[in-house]
Amino acid sequence: MPDNFLKFCPHCGSDNFKPQGVKEFLCDACGFDFFVNSAAAVTALILDSSGSLLVTRRGRNPGKGLLDLPGGFVDPSESLETALRRELSEELGVSVSSASYFASAPNVYVFSGYAVHTTDVAFVCSVSGNPSPADDVDEILWLSPESIDLSLFAFHSIRSFVESFLLSRVTSNKMSSPSA
Image (cartoon, helix red, strand yellow):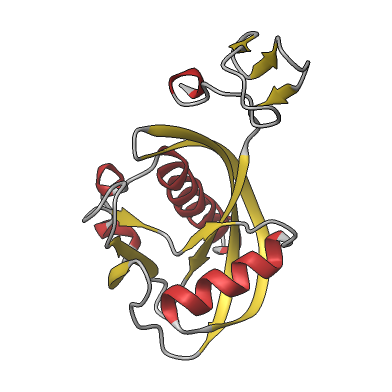
């Protein structure tokens, strides 16, 4: 919880910085009012020509060793699209050819004991270049839809994106198949 970490007013340094509910803090000394808001993060759903999904294995905590989709936090003054291009370049060494919005979901990213509430945004992407693991990615895997085990993913939001994406592909394939 933020009140385990936010003990002093970031404006005046007073220890009279008190929680006013779940996400608001107020300094009794200077009147500074602070809200803990959601951080933005982006992720990519990338398929190869055979329909396998690009999945990464996390090289760092939280969730070290578990599965993930490539992506990361949006930097200050950065758009979602710019963050997506930067993250895929950093983690996979690829360029984004196209990206379309897929879904968003809330998540909690616990790092160093601090819970960062995030709003994660997923894009369906086409990329150019040969993906190779870099930055905080230990391994890249191309998984066929039937081989994906959702319980092996590090974060709830990523599991929900993968599950929804796979379901949408099954529904799309059924709708495009000729009826008997």
